[in-house]
Length: 232
Image (cartoon, rainbow, N blue to C red; front, side, top):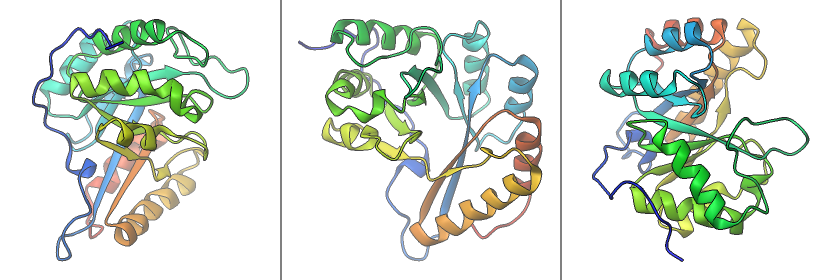
């Protein structure tokens, strides 16, 4: 049956990095999304002070998320709902997570709840989700909601077996996948190396997207990196 959604389709300004590869003479595009925001108030405040070109993804269940997300949108950031989804293994992705085996109505209820918690979101990316995003059929009701609401899907690609981008495209939902994790290794040298890899990937592909997290070193290094010219 058709998903019941709470918002009508509206025109939304999607970020440039969601679009096609730039024209031949255009500079490559790179993007950085900081996710896991909302729970750590001090770190979220620091992330909001990053330049507005940095996308910010908020955990729906964090008590401070509605206020932070609204503020981020007002300040010009691209805002995403960082929706918890079932991982491989036993780690807990958080309340209202989407899980394999749930009835479509329950998936819709949980997803709509998450989206209502992140005002101004123009897209969704998965928090955890290595198990949930591996199942195209289970992703179908998620993509139906995103299509109906006019949102895009940013696949965090927490596993190589993710079907997220393929399921989005099959449903007619604009989508992109993460290329680089900036801070699986939080040492400064490692984060710097991943920023270099982001530039190299962008120059090779035309567009490259990185995910970072609100660690002190990541936020400090990203701010300094953005003040420099990397040819992208």
